[in-house]
Amino acid sequence: MRKVVFIAIVVFTGLTQAQTNFEKGMTKAFELWESDKLDEAENMFERIAKAEEDEWLPNYYIAQINSLKSWDEKDETILKAQLGKAQDHLDIAMSKTESNAELLVMQAQVYTNWVAYDGATYGMKYAGKVAELYAKAVKLDPTNPRAAFCKADWGMGSAKYFGQDTEPFCGEIEASIKLFDTFKPESDFHPNWGKERAKEVLTVCKE
Image (cartoon, rainbow, N blue to C red):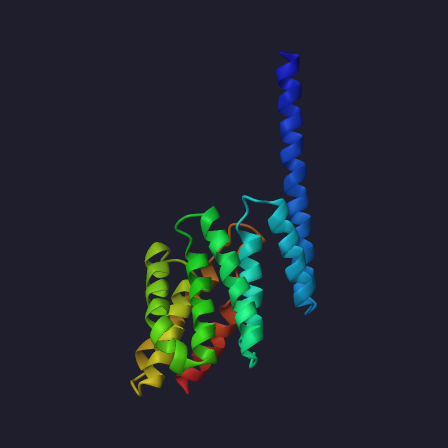
């Protein structure tokens, strides 16, 4: 009996220590990110991803960082490397968790990077997929503010491109902000971005 208790204590201690190391690593990575040290933050997330094989969050943030770095990138070689890396880590993250609205949103973001870089080349390939991913994310998790906002923002951008009325999307964006107000992430490390951007888009939408 004492042996069983000892084993249980050792296992629990090991799990607690692993969780502590994960939390420390994630905290450090976010601190680097907030200090605009994206490369250092990315490296930290990569180390965490290797150590925590069951956690999808480090891979998610590696994908997000590479997506963010790609928005204004003009060098196609660099862009392909960054978005290729983002895709690789999204694929890994998706293999670790099923039915995840956050990953669907990030996948749509990466596809949007390609469209923003060269709409003539990548619009036909990815535009439909982006719309499908956002629709799927909203259906999967109607309370997720990023899914709601990004779906409306993409719809508004598409309407502008085709010279259509964007007014209907203003209400959707406003509704997404209400979702941001009530949304509670699962932990301090789960995605919680987008509210300020939604407010900016709503301001422009109402002008």
